[in-house]
Amino acid sequence: MKNTLPLFTALLLAPLASSHAAEAGQPATHFSTFAQATLHESPLLNRIKLAKQRGRSYPMDSLDFIMVDLERPETLTRHADFCTGDLTGRYLDLLATSAHLEPSDHDRMQALFTRILKCQAPNGAFGRVQVQDMGVSKDELAWAASSKVFMGLLRYYQETGDPKALTAARRNAEFFFANLDRIREASIQQKKPEDLHQWIRSAGGLGDVGNWITEPMAELFGITGDQRCLDVCRAVAEAQQSLKGRHSHGVMTTLRGLQLAAIYTGDTSWNKLPEQFRKEIAKEVAWADGSISELFPTSKRNEGCSIADWVMLNLYAGFISGEDEAYEKAENALWNALFLNQTVNGGFGHRDLESDHTYGGAVLSMECWFCCLHNAGLAMVEFADHALTLRGDELRINLLVPGRYQVPYKGTTIEVEVSTRYPEKADTTVVISGAPAEMKARIRIPSCIKGAEVKVTNLPGGKTRHVLSGRMGYQLEEVRNGVVLRYGPLVMAPLRYAQNVKVTNKDNDFLQGYVFERIDKGRATIVPPDKDADGFYLFPKEPKPIWKNYEEGTLSRLAFDNLSINVKLAYPDGTSQEHRFWPECYSTTSTASGAPVPVVFAKPEASK
Ligand SMILES: [Zn+2]
Figure 1 (cartoon, rainbow, N blue to C red):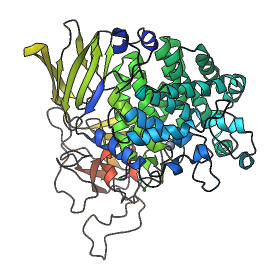
Figure 2: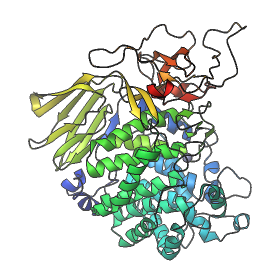
Figure 3: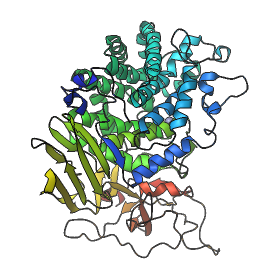
Figure 4: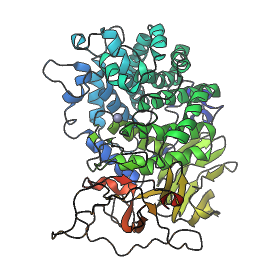
């Protein structure tokens, strides 16, 4: 259960979007949790469960191991142990934020919180750092990363209502307030990619990671109304100049903090910079499937954290503006790049990028159990939280996520049941109970649905049933650097495409498809088959491959039924070959792909 807070956040929310809490005269918790959701069986829910399961698996099954970045025992070091409070804070944040959707780990969350509290110094900072290793002062190191603990405490407070968490967060904030001049000075530094590692080691300035102090500061403002929180956000915002060469996760989390400032103050001027950068990222940086490089604009790998931030940046943008375009971007990045990034053990991390249109062969080049797991987990939870929001007297169904939602509204609770297998099919039924007569309901219709219709029926007992119907199919979409093939919102890719792989089926007895054939003929073009009456391409589904890496069918917990297809690719030398294409979001179950995966193909004229 979310706890109610004795605060005025909700009133501040009202100018932008009406929250249930504001309507009911109750305090708000985290702004996005308008509806208490119980998710039904879906790939999203199963992926959230997988991520949480990964969070308690080796080596994180040991809280001693997790706590190293704060406790710094003499007897154990680990990856990123110098990132003060980073893993500890991220984990507390994820456990608290996801508790209402997936209530496992309650005892772990409490145990983690208890140990984190013990690591707060008298000046409010967190962590016991080994100063001699870093050659910097204790303060400098502590403030750079510890905002994740700060955020984790706030979300823990919102989940449990434990006043000890808010007290600790406020003491932590005092440490930052006392250093506002240093924050202002340090934020101005623009880091070059080659400086990043050095910066992380030295932690001498806030840089792109430290800047994300905006997130907990805005959240604390939302809870307490302390104007000094906004002073910190302003100092960071004024220092932002361009995206180039910067750490994408750092920058986008910073921007999300400024979005929170817009939401909690009701002052949209806070949203100017996030919108400017969001548009720039969409136009010039993000892949067609929502993938984001670790560094802006491009680098040799993406990062689960960055894709997750891109999902959330768009969710918040949609919340502020009410515009469909932002939700569409969030949906695209979640279903394609983010889900592609998750491995079968539930983890997230880095995926190598061969070019601006082709992923490297390995499913993940590095699993980041210390960051991506938690930020991606958050993005999935927030996606579900943003599925239903209120905007004035309008109930918005922004995202088609199957579940039962309870929406507090003007002292009553509206029940909403969403049944769907979207994005396998467009068909969605929404039953709303207990809504007052003046309330309107609006379902965002994804642009991939053709002939979309919403039929509303009044049912006995004041209920209404909204049935969305329409058709989805395979379409080619022209993008910045070529063409992508989609089924509905799902990007289709030859997940075992074998360009440059030096093995063949010749002279061996392997099953067909087990060893992929070498294809090294340049960038391919998709050969379009006939279209149906709706303009959807009729790619053949048969013959099915003998050897499959990805499961498919009605029993699959992460995939859908019968969406994979055979696609003919034409090469610049005039030859062509058929490949099995799968939705990118199927990739979790297999770590076997050793081949690069192109997701954007040449525009037809380029191949001639
Ligand atoms: Zn990460």
